[in-house]
Every structure is written in C-alpha cells, then in structure tokens.
Length: 329
Image (cartoon, rainbow, N blue to C red; front, side, top):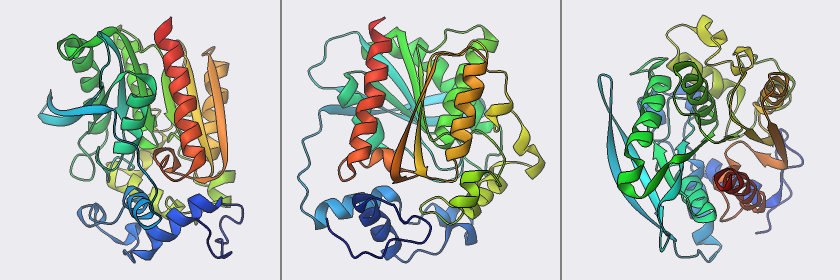
C-alpha cells in the first residue's frame, strides 16, 4: 500500500498504512463535521468505511469471522438502548464477558462503526463481547449516555448466564468517549457497591477538558479527530459548556481510588494523547494498577483498523492479552 509522499503537515511521521486510510476518508469529500448538525454528521463517511474501501481496493484477504452476533434491547430509564452480543464460535461455556462502549464523542457513531473493534476483541480473547449503544446528544444531553452505559453493565451482570456468559468474569473496554464511559461505569460500580469489573481497557479515552494541552496544540488539525471536532462534540453533548469540568467528563479530576486494574492505549497523533497520559498518572497516584502503551505514527480511531494497520493488530492483541490474564485469575 505505497502512497505518494505527501504526508500531512499535522503528522509528518504518520505511518503509510494509516495515511492510506486517512487519504481515503478525505477522498469522500464530506463536509467538515464541525459545520454540520448532529443528524447530518451521523451521515458522513466514517473511518470504518474508509478501511472497508481500502481492503477492497487493495484486495486484502479478510479471514472468515469467528463469532456469531445477536441484537438485544436493554431497558433504561425513559427508553431502551440496543446492544450487539458477539459470541465466539465453538467456544465452551460459560465464557467471560467484555462490555464494550464505542466512541463518537457521545454524539455520532454507533455499534456498526466500531464493529471491527468488538469483533476483534471477541475473536482474540474467546470472550463474549457486548457492544453497547447509548442515547446521544444533542437529543439526549449529559449525563444520559453515562447513565445508559451503567444500566447496560448492570443488565449484563443480571443476564450474562442466559447467553452462556459468566457473570463473575466481566471486564470493560471502550474507545474515545467510550473509554470515558467505561471508566465511569467502574466508578459508579464502586460508589454503588456493585460488582466491580475485573479490569478496564481504555483506548485513547476522553479524560480532561483542557483543549490547550500539549497534544491539543500539536495535533489541533489532526484527522480524523481535531480540536474543532472535539469542541463541536462537547457543545452537542453537554447542556452547558461550563460542565466540561465535571469529573465524569474530566476523569483526571475524579476520585479514582479503588478502581479495577486499568490499561490505557494511546495514539501519538491524537489531541487526546496528553490526557491519556495524565489519566495514567492520576490512576497510579490513586493506587490503581495501571499500564499504558502508546502507539507512534497512528491517529485517533486506529484501534479498529487491524485489517490494514499493523499497529491496530498489535494493539488489539495487547488489549486481548490483558483481558485474558484478568479472566484467568
């Protein structure tokens, strides 16, 4: 997958495979997210669309999926949310369970956009993955999504056995805004005295509200996530911009004591990189067993791109190793 040497000024060191995906995403000519309403932005092409097109255009062989999926509706206060359960084929039972929360700034994207991440984790861990959608802003403002994902976690604990899951072996994973949501679920479980997840894997999580951090300045114009897109997402999800300092959004301001072992995966070319490192440090200060791995040369959203980006394959293997170890205890 060679490309012309015109790497972007915002990332001279972007790796070739990742740049091919970004170039494909830009080639669709969609209007910038930050100029659109949320319903319009949800119709834009996604990084997942770009990966699928790159796979087809470069004739990249795709292995046959090793999981079966089924949709479930989860009741929540004032409505319902959809989840997709990924069950490894030919697996014994009961199987451990990973509750997975997708990204999209609490505004855009869904479980289809992040199918490759959830599917990859199920295949690599042999665990059931429950990928949870949640109500999004601006139609459903903060803290709706935060409450929805905790309700989904409780639902999984109650119902896991009915779909061959082991309710005693449940872990959390999430990407971007979903990484923020996963950590919030751990905090709420602690505060409400409910079974704690065995571990949490947070992939480039939203963890602070400082949009002048080192990585926000360095990668303000990065693709697919830029400073202006984050500002747009915050404006759409929060009832008031002043709420961005709420510890449920700015996790580095939260009480993190007593949380489960945490793995944070970061991307170098990402406005959120600095806050991922800060969250690592704050978790360690709070006495939480924490490990952190940064992938250089890749952008936000790389984790689900294992079909074309080698670092994504490595990151999924790394996350899966952490999860399998937690399940063995």
